[in-house]
Every structure is written in C-alpha cells, then in structure tokens.
Image 1: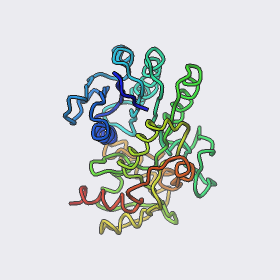
Image 2: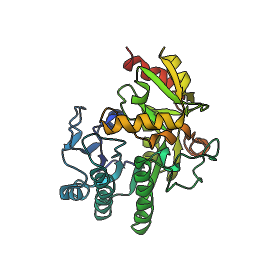
Image 3: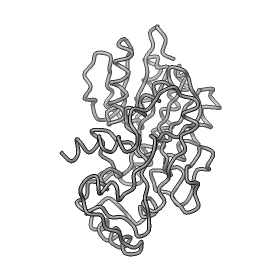
Length: 317
C-alpha cells in the first residue's frame, strides 16, 4: 500500500501501452505520488510527479534508482514479444539480465512489493490442455514460443529471489492484451488483409482490456494481494469471428502448407511470424479466471468481445 510519506514507486517499461495506462491511472488516483519510469523511450505522459530515466533495465544506473528515490513498490513491465531490431540474445539480455538487475536493486533498496506482468503463454501451446487453464497448470519448457519461455524463466527467478530476500510479490499472467493503441505480434495477425487460420481449428482468443489489467495491478498494490493470477476477460472470440467483425475474408490452410509459407516469408524478412507460431494458433490457451475473481474486488469493464470491438474502433477506422 502507498502510504502518506516521502515514498515513490518504480515502473520499468512504463513508456509502452500498458505502462502508459498504469501511469495515467496512478496519477489520477494518487496525485501526490512520485513515479519513476525506467525506459529508454521517454514517456508521453506529462506530469511533475513522473520522473523519466531514459536508460535500460540492464544498466548499472538502474540499480541505484530504487534506493536513491526510496521506491517501495516496483511494477516490472518489461517484455518483448518480438522485434526486428533485436536479436534473440539481446531480448534475453533485456528480459532476464534486466530482471535480475531490478531485483538486485529491490533488495538493496526499500522495496516491499514486486509486481510482475508475465503472460498466459507460460502454459505453452500443445494438445491435451485443460479447456480453461488454471494457475496450477505447470509452466511449459517445450511447445512454447520464446516470449513465453522468457516469462516462465522470469517467474522462477522472481519467486526464488523474493523468498530469499523477503520481498512480497504478485505475478499476473494475462491473456492477449488489447487497448486503443495496442500493436503487438498477436494484434498484427488480425491486421492482415486476409485472416488466415488452420483447417479444423477453432483458434479461440481471450482478451483483456489494458485498463482492466491496470485496475487489477493497482488493487494488488493497494491491498497487497500476493500470488500468481491469470487475467482474462469473460468469454473468447474465435479467429473466424475476428475476420467477420472486420468484414475480412477468412481462409484456412493445413498446418504443413501454412508452416512452409510462414517459414519462407520470415526468411525473406517479409513477416515476423515463424513456423513455431503454428501451435500458437492451433492450441490457443483460454485462461481460468476464478482465482482472480475470488481475491480481487475489481470488476472488468469489458468482455473479450467488447475489448476487441473497442480495439477495432481505432485500428480499422
């Protein structure tokens, strides 16, 4: 909980879509709160209460900020789903070494609560999964995309480190996050002129509106709600529905043909998707949200369908 004394909080990756929403919401609710943002890109939010540190989470300077400014809560939002500019090694450096840097800073400083945004991708993509995946489902080591693998590894690091250093922590595993300014490897699949799916595959997408995830994050800070939680709105939308809602043609291909096409186009640097994303399409995880509903009083503003429809208003206008 944020108390009425000279304290502040730290957000890493706060210049992205989710971080911007979190900063805006915190400034409205806590107008005197000082927020420090570590991000190479300066935040677009204008406020005297927001202090930007245009550095990487892997830098030596990042370690000193938590203690210097008496940050008692850390929201670690850094996550790279895909990048044309960064290699796999560079992404791993930012996500894992950067995380270790911020955890070390937290232990040296006065951090009481560490909040991490992971991903539902940690469960992997394979046949035989529960229809609605609970938090008790083991994280996957195989049948998983790089982003999910990095998040799963990060979760293990956080639990071990926070237990050893007596830092309370909360981990959120959201499904696909949508917002008015969202642009990621999931949403860009919907932006194609023709929506491509796999034969005999439903491909359900559950979404969470970015403001709803932010609402849960703030409540976890205020009430010190600890543990690991799936975050998903009510319901899901099939890939065919996604095409229909955009008045786009929906085409299905067999796995071998689609895999070959993706592999060829990726090698030519024409698309960001690779053969590994086939199982990402075929075995979409739908998250069980009962644990979150039982512990949090926050009520979601949008269902999965409503989140997608609102997303379309700004992306297909």
